Image (tube, rainbow over all chains, first blue to last red; front, top):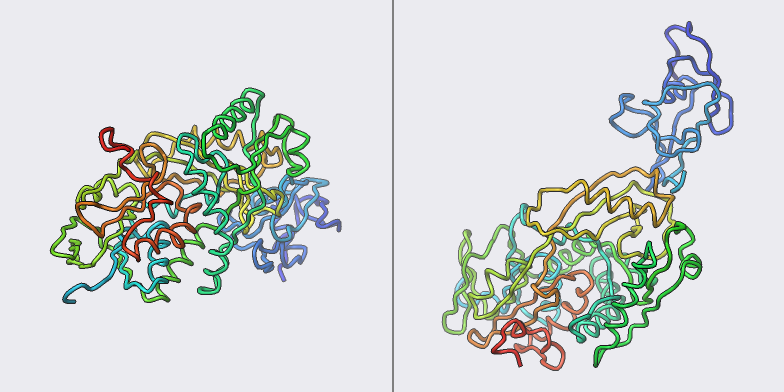
Length: 97
Length: 374
């Protein structure tokens, strides 16, 4: 759905739910997921509805993902880093993660 | 309206008031509930939602029996509310814990329970002291600093906001007149009738039940009753929704049916409902993390403070006026725990026109009166 305007920054390899995703230096996790065509990053805690990043500026909390084992991180506020492990968050967060 | 518009006017639309109003309506009374507006200082929207038995009754043994009675009536109460409203208030009674983070805390806990159970006439509600290993069997996520706990199988919890909504839905369905923004200014008796003055006009009723929480202190003397109160502030911290991990409520930490974790039970001598003391929230959260280390990285989504309804000695007041027959007080701290009693036991007494002394004599406010206490 989305395509990059420019592809000039260096590639950064991350995984999303175990699959390799090629991000770019300077991407946020949310931007990298959208660029990779991942259509939702979590399901809601009560009804299980799928949610995608929405505001991309730290306000809406719809882009919550698990980053390197820590749940409920705002994907739009976390820059990608080489080797980062991202998991989509299904329903309620698990305490301790 | 002319003449006696209502059999009973309930003053106060919080949990105590609406539980009483519902019980009265079930007895066939024509009931009006006079409530304040949206800005009322309302414990019913800020409470911790325990249906709690352990440690109740130290200093007044009948309070233990009264609490156990409500705890036992709660399941049927919740089922009836569901039948009438379709709302599940998620009452659960899996047994509850009071965790100790040091040997000293555990010893203090054991002493309180011993003193409580040594009182003459006390009902035995089977509270035990457990060590770390015994607690860990039921609460596997406790931290190493938890040295033990007291456990009572009668303790439980409920979704108290849904309880509040269910009771309002139920009184509406039963034809109770609910009048918000009707703060009662004065109450006068004229003939056999009570006249309750509000800024919106006068309401007349044959009986009046004061269920206005801390405001009972102001209202009770208008009908020859006494309600000495000592409000205090409590604070609650609420986390994001988590997968269920806590199967039993702890007196300071519980996981709701919807997944959030509530952390609370602070006590502060303040009557400012808008303030929040950050150090208290930090202490509450810090203790919760020592009790359940997996909470350490969880996000907090809300904190709030609320003013507890508290009588001067902490025990309920149920009274009927001698000088103003037909006037009653229904006043207590534990509006959630005792909701079943208020609906199923107190309300029918008010409907009959007299309190049953064999059940509620110990809770008369006469106990505050040295000369009259008997």
